[in-house]
Image 1 (cartoon, helix red, strand yellow):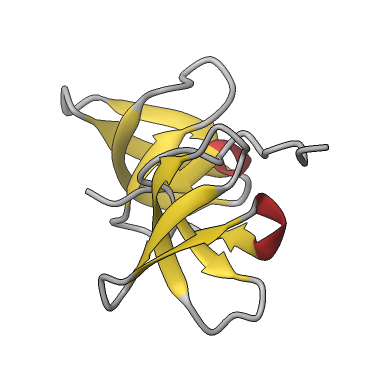
Image 2: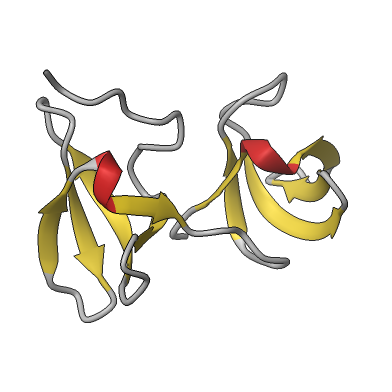
Length: 107
């Protein structure tokens, strides 16, 4: 059976291999639930959700909201305040979202 993919398992999301030695971004999700990912050296490989962790977003990263009221919104992570994150969306508006609902994405 295919493993249950986490909510952040989608194109452009930045990930880190569980061994911690490689960072990559998801290029495309395959029908079987695996993903083709592009590593920093531009090579690609196929990984399962269980092989990787989401890369934690940092201030000034481009992020995607993966849950809550603002799901689907992209913006720049302006600052992190405890469990809250403040981001600036494409309309230059500021939004406060739960940091747990953010995924770092490739621009």
